Each structure stands twice: as C-alpha cells, then as structure tokens.
Amino acid sequence: MRVIVVRHHRIDEAGFVADAFAARGAELSTHLFPGQPPLPSLDGVGHVVVLGAAWSVYEERIADWIGAELDWLRQADAAGIPVLGICFGAQALTVALGGRVEAAPRSEVGWVTVQTADAGLIEPGPWLEFHRDRCLPPPGARVLASNDVCVQAYGVGPHLAVQFHPEVDGAQVGRWLADGGRAEAERAGQDPDRLLAETRAAEPAAGRRADRLVAAALRLADAAGR
Image 1 (cartoon, rainbow, N blue to C red):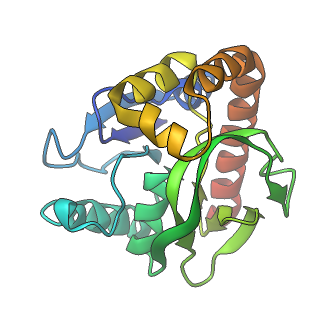
Image 2 (image 1 turned 180 degrees about the vertical axis):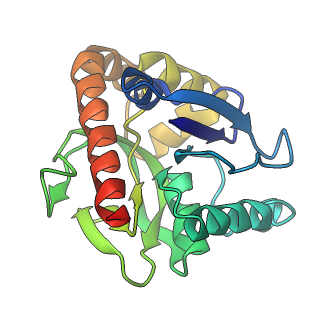
C-alpha cells in the first residue's frame, strides 16, 4: 500500500503514525505543502495522511493555497482513497467535505482524555492536543469522540478525522515549543517544560495507541469499501 503524508511545516513528521503504517508494509512518501507545490498524484495511492499546521483553515493568510489542498482532498474522496486527517488535517477534510471550522471556546494544549462513542475505534487516550479551533463535521459524519471543547474524532465514509495528535513524540513537541509553541502553551495554562517531560515519558504508551488508531483507520476504510 502506498501512503502519502502531507505535512505543512518542515519541522513536522508523521512519527508514530508513520511507524504504524510502515509496520503494516506500507510504502510512505512525505510531501511538504505549500512548500512543494503541486500536491502529488493520487494514482495508485492507498491512504492519505494530512498533518497539522500552525494556521487555522479559514485564515486569509493561507487563502492563496488552501483551496488547492481542499480540492485535492475532494479528489481523494471521489476516488475512494481514505484520508486520516490530524488536527489541521482534520479541519481541512471537514471543510473539503462540506463541514465548517470555527474558533474553539478555548485552546487545548496538553494531554487530554476524551469521551469516546466507540472505544474500538477511538480510545479515551490520553491524547496530545495542540489546537485552538474545532470542527463542525460534514454531513453524514459519525462522531466517534468528543469533550467539552469540541468533536475530537469523527468518521465519514472511509475517512477518519482526529483533532488530537497521535503522531507526536517528545522530539516533535520540542520542535513545536522552540518554534513559537512555548508561548501558546503558556497562554493555555501549560508549563512548557513539564509538557515536554510528560510527552517524553508518555512515548511508549503513545506509540502503542497510535498503532491501534491506525489499525482502526484501516478497519474503517475497509468497512466503507465493502
């Protein structure tokens, strides 16, 4: 299976999610967008993973390129190619399929336990959160997890969208904090150094959860294809 990973910043990696796909024999390729336009061909692709971003999907400052990403996601949907959307990736998938994204009532930064509607697909966590927006899912979506801030996961057709970050390890969080995330974490009431230490300590369990999440995404896609 060929898997395309779309990242929006050079410092981002698919981490534990990439490991989980690779463990199942997938061949992964990573594409930086908008840094490396255009987005790649979807011919022969078995799954798409879209990672997070520092922007909101509705911001005017990304208006010159977000339309191309949304169109590409619609092409994937039309071709029946499953998408795993993570944070900003979930928000882009939401808008591409007819939902909306808006500012959340408060930012979420840190390790959060969610309320799951289907623990076989989405575990309660804890999951790492680093966002300030929320998805209003597209028509036909099934909410799989939520909390008092927002929908945390939903499925629609073969696609899975998650607001949290199953992919991250301590190194990734360290890069975010060094790239402006420290101030965002502090505004959300987090001690950045403690967050980094917690993330490093959580790596073994987080990797296993990410593996099970990818397995669930593949089951969801297979079920939609039958």
